[in-house]
Image 1 (spheres, rainbow, N blue to C red):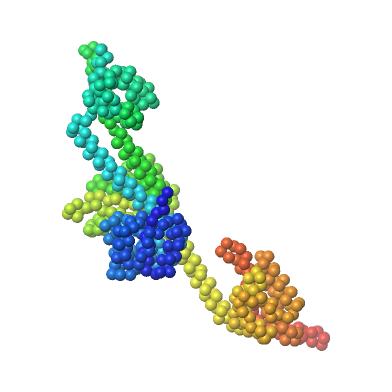
Image 2: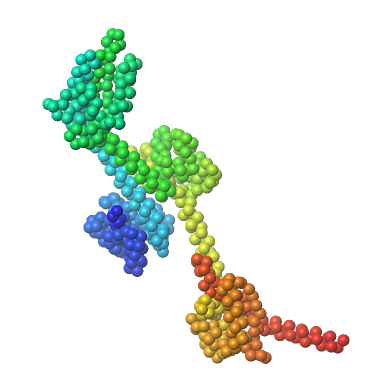
Length: 542
């Protein structure tokens, strides 16, 4: 299978290189990387990419949205926008270009993969649908011409004499020579597909019934020239005598092979559309504005958690009832506002309430078809389930808030007073962080200055103290979280700290280091000593 070819439009060179690398890692081929609207048009004409990943802010007179509009109108190539800015004004302008998706910067490979695959699926389904429609239209034209020119084979079977006569078209359809082939019941039966002979023999009963003088069916035949299987439509009439005994059968056959191929192609196209709906969690619908009747795809039923039997004949009112009660009035008002305006491409977001009581967020995009006077006639739309996206946005918001809190805490620690010490080590007991208070403490004890990456034991000469400290760090590396009262320095000039030891984990929950938060409790210790001395004197005086 050939790789999808993608044109990258990005005015930041470093970001462009990162995007190109990500696309190649994901198995796509980058046809070109450009940074302006004019270069996009040139590249599209030259390379004909399958999809364009378009930055909205690019160099030149035209931005990404203007360029996407030109591409859509002139070339019909799908566009996915990439941007770090998605304000309301840009959203409204971007809607007009009918993009196949958005990816927000910084671009994550997983999001990029899902967005591009969905866009390529939908674009392919759209092409297949258009090709199928065009093929169907062409087939209908051919059929009309065939009927007009009488290119339908007709035949006559005299049941008394067993004589069968064919028109010239019958020989052409079956691929047999008129001079050498003599139609009889036995010879004609051999022209049919073996699997259909028994069925046709059973259907002979139909032509014997006076209540059904005209009988129609479809069958397969084997073209005797090419060996190919053909589909034919058979229409026959039984002629009876005054006693209702069959005396003659006459009829026509029509080659419907092309129609069958189109039906099969249409079936495959519908399957592809269904896959695209499943992948994109989307559903399609249409509405006749005169009757208010709607047509729903299977994807639309799935979004609402319904089966076709639940709503056999969907209408706008039934569609409206599926919307969350709190959003229903707003949706209806905006929908009618769109109809009253001259807008063609419209969009809105709302919640629905499924049959099982599940709330989903829906992004509805629809196109209003209007007559020459601008009056709305019908609507074609697509609903996309964006519940996961909404939840992801909420999770990102919560993560951002959590990071802000942690950053605030980190800032407060960095700017903490001298009596508060903060530092962290990796599993080799080397510094990965320390605040100014810890730096000054070590310098006052050992006279040396510490650095990131230096061993925490490098400037400690007290072997007993080193052993005790290492024991505490090892406890943390075993997963413990604890606090301890510790002293540093020579006897008589020791500094006392209450230290809190905590393990550090990476994103995959692997223990990678230890953090220590220590508070100078020298004053508290002095108070405890003074209290002990006072208590001893009191006891002695007694």
